[in-house]
Amino acid sequence: MTRVSNSPEIKYFNRMTGKNEVEKVYGDLFIKFLYCSEAGKKLGGIFTNKIFSKTYGAFQDLPSSHRKVKPFIEKFNIPIQDYEPGSRPSLDSSDSYRSFNEFFIRKFKLGKRSFVPEASKMAAFAEARYVGFDSVEEKSVYPVKGQYLKAKDLIGNDQIAKIFEGGPLLIARLCPVDYHRYHYPDNGKVVEHYPISGAFDSVNPLALKEKNQIFIKNERHVSILQTENFGRLAYIEVGAICVGKIVQTHRWNKPFLRGEEKGYFLFGGSTVILMGEKGLWKPSNDIIQNTKNGIETYLHLGQEVATKV
Picture 1 (cartoon, rainbow, N blue to C red):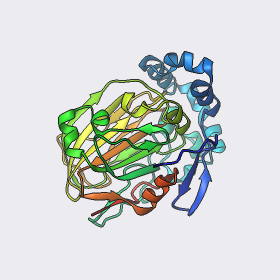
Picture 2 (picture 1 turned 45 degrees about the horizontal axis):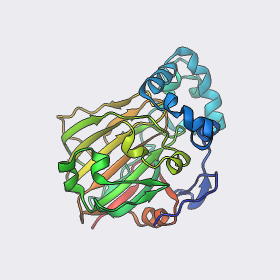
Picture 3 (picture 1 turned 120 degrees about the vertical axis):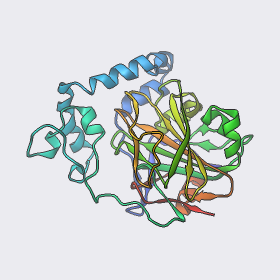
Picture 4 (picture 1 turned 135 degrees about the vertical axis):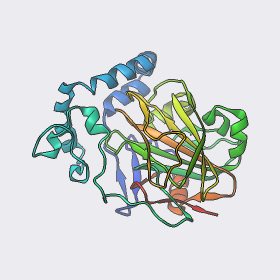
């Protein structure tokens, strides 16, 4: 069972540094108010509905939101030199984004991230903090920072969910400071896709601990993928508070390649969930062990996230 710390700090294991680190949380006071205070819990519906998130997201498209970018980069130590500059003419790349949303969906420069080429290794589909499990039975529940999950609830279709009963599970949490484009973990094709309407709660671990049905109540988009090396995958993008939109950039009827972009989230932290068929693959050992210890594992896009069984 995953142990959930009572500490207000959010700790994660950084695979690149080999150390446990403390997350810098954007909007931490607002999250604590919304999910940990009595007033916030009573007012929660005002902030976790579609209208609020879409409206707030729209403000991030205004030219005036450009002024937020440079202070954000400095406060959260964003390595802006790793990213393509924005469309605003400037010698300073941190001043080159016309809006906060343009900065938010920034792309990596060519060569900054590579995808593991071995067929037996699954590539990380997002630059994010991961938890993972060998198997998730439909009738079982697993705590993920206070969240309890079932395949049929995540996928929203009982018949499709049967494909993934007892299969592996990966959850990639993207913070507002992260790269917010998500990619395909292997070669393949999309065999089905559909949206599921819902709320826009935060996916911050503090929120997940206080409100344990966020992943199955939030708005999400489900894609069923047939992959070359890992069988069928349920690829689920989960919206969150202030996420203006989940955008799909890849054409559904076009085959995809490992590492190819699938889409992106406009402003706000969010989550991508991946489910697989039983016995075909399992999350990487460090992810499984850290999950058992109640801590997430931070990976770069394209690193090994799972292996074939």
